[in-house]
Amino acid sequence: MTHKKIKFIKAACLTVIALFPTLVSAANSALDKLNAVGADSGPYQGVTTGGFSGSYRISEIIGTAVQAVLGLMGTIFLVLMLYAGYHWMTARGEEEKVSIAKDTITRAIIGLIIVVSAYAIWKFIFDQLISK
Image (cartoon, rainbow, N blue to C red; front, side, top):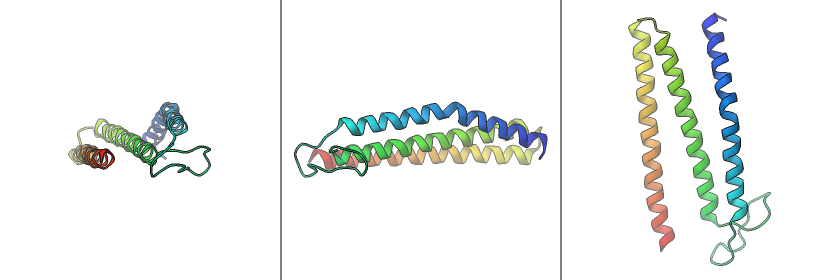
């Protein structure tokens, strides 16, 4: 492997190590939310999740799943931005590499806009369904 690839792999590993405590903390807070919520009445009374003891509202389970997916999308966005930035900085004036990095950044931003828009639409519809 070339020296550039080894440097990139080291940087990626350090990034994952730096982000790992945050990801684990997010998972723990999601489990705490699940453990704190119970469905005492209504159509979802006694609904349980496999492996967890107690009863939970289905809306809380879905909300926790959406929170986890959004966290994953944010992490993917960050990794794409770091990847594109690395390639732009190491392009050394080569227009083809710079344009590839710009395209990666543009696509990452468009993807983030799509994910945030989908979340906003989902939240609006879900809130309207729950309020009725």
